[in-house]
Length: 100
Image (cartoon, rainbow, N blue to C red; front, side, top):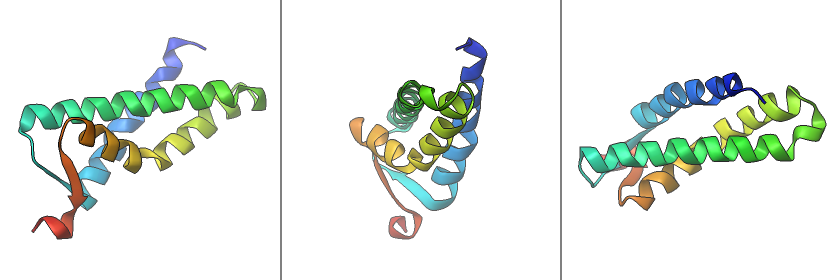
């Protein structure tokens, strides 16, 4: 698999995470540095899941099994990955209505 394929999950993570965190969730606890580290941990978890799914589903096909399906499943799992990523650094992700 070419390094160019990694552009898709990396490029897709940022807008999807921004929509999820900016519109529906709010971060509580930790300073800006801890929150940034939580975001980077979430990115690593997202990329790891995408890579593992690509490896497991590669028999389905080179494009469908290694790129399309892992990308869709990783985006679906993004809320759980973000919650875990932030929780590992001590930041809570709460529903925006609960924060106010």
